[in-house]
Amino acid sequence: MNTPSYERRLMADCVPDLVATARGDLPATLVIRGGTLVNVISGEILPGMSVAVQGARIAYVGKDVSHTIGEHTRIIEAEGKYIAPGLLDGHCHIESTQMKVTEFARAVLPSGTTGGFFDPHEISNVLGLKGLRLMLDEARTTPMAAYMQVASCVPSTHPGLETTGAHIGPEEVAEALSWGPDMIGLGEVMNFPGVVYGDETMIGEIQATLRAGKVADGHFTWAADDWRLPAYAASGVTGDHECVTKEDVVERLRLGMYAKMRQGSAWHDVAETIKACTELGLDTRRMMLVTDDRSSESLLKEGHMDFVVRLAISQGVKPVTAFQMATINTAERFGVARDIGAVIPGNIADIILLDGRLADVRVGMTIAAGHVVAENGKMTAVWDSFTYPEEALNTVKLEANIQPKHMDLSAPITEGTIGAKVIHVTENHVDTKEKHVNVTVEHGNVVISTSGEICKIAVLERHKQTGNRAVALVGGIGFTGPAAIAMTVAHDSHNLLIIGNDDALMAEAGNRVIGMQGGVAVVTASGVTEFPLRIAGLMSTESFEVVAAQSAAISEALQSAGCTLNNAFMTLSLLALVVIPELRLSDKGLVRISAEGIELVSLFDEMVENTPAAPAGN
Image (tube, rainbow, N blue to C red; front, side, top):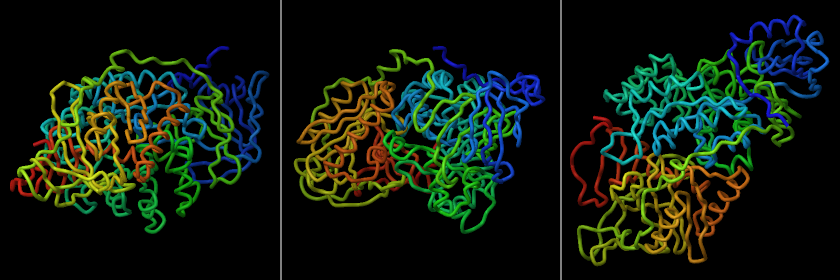
């Protein structure tokens, strides 16, 4: 059996064949006949339409394409079905699914996602440009239109706040953007304070992007009416997914930015942000639907962009408008609307056929680059496998000798009670809250209860053998008995993160993750649940189905231990992300993120320094 070519040839190279097919002189390779076209350009629903395809691109769209049919043309009858452009994810981190790119493609193509704009800043924080190049090369083996962005924040903010595995600056950005047209731009610029206050590295990365004729994506978490949002937009950042209210959408649109409305597994923002359309009636052409982070479990149970489009429709958005938000708006934002995002002559044939009502977004067939790749929820396409090198499989540079004493939390008093800061988890949101509690100190160390609200959280540096280790307090986890979880998925530096209420279990969980060379381990009195993630400590070498099952086992283990947070693993993995308010933990200590900037602070209230926060990057 020959593997079909999913090559996406440049439009200029295809013009002679496309025009010849449109004339009827060259038979189409594929015809979709007699369906109802969802025209996302005009906003119309057009019955009785057909599409003729030549190779990877669309040659003709009209009522009658019989003149393009030849002896070897494959004909797909679409009567009673909708013909729509393949769905696009305008902001996604593939690593957050814990799957490599080929398995991600297998997971999402059957549900109608034919392309996306991917920010591999997770693997880039571990392996630098080598990791980005590996994911790009793997993506090119799939039928999916996978556009990659260069990670802008490696590390996520200035190095004094955390230790990461690599460094990416303006020179690296310029190099990566030269790798091909599928290197589409600069990934989310999370160090927004650095941009506003003129950090040379951040400004330089944006300049390198603009000089290459590419786009820069944003990540701005200060308030929508903050005077610094226009300053951020002045840098050339033109899209942002950190929209959680309708006001966030409004202010970004007014500044000419694309507002990305996010529905991941743990971040549920569409219901509020979509009100900028349904309640305020704003023009939707710069509104986009995205996932950001979606777990393998969610992909298996709910779907991908089809789920997000359905959700938007359920909130009152017209179906054709919701499709625009996940197709042509996204393609236009990244400057590739003459390749993807609409079923029009010349565009690449990324097409989905929908059964039932349009609002149901029930994908019956997926066509990518002119080939049928999935039918009835199952992959039909095959492509070459991709193997990661040993360098990417051995990235945890720690010895499995963590001791319970390494989880000690030293206090500035020997005995008694002292006030302390607690990182409090906010369910279904990326932000945390800073809370203050009184904790008990015995023999100079903080003591917590295995049945209490407070857990310990520890971050151990795993890239450069610095020996850095920080321990703090976290609330909202929900453990009802002795339990611990350890993981190397710890955005964005991806050091070893351990959370628990029992020092011995925390040490065991950490050692098990080290022994796996990356992954997740939940340890309780009743047993151990492991989820190996060998590729950079972030992604599995296993199939989509195995990854989903192992991810589900972690969720079940956490629930059994009392942690009932929605998509708990994904929420907990953000507790080391030192660019999102209010409190986080890095390998260098407790970090406070506020409107004034980002700073390291003492865990204990009595020890807090009364110095103003410095803007990140200064």
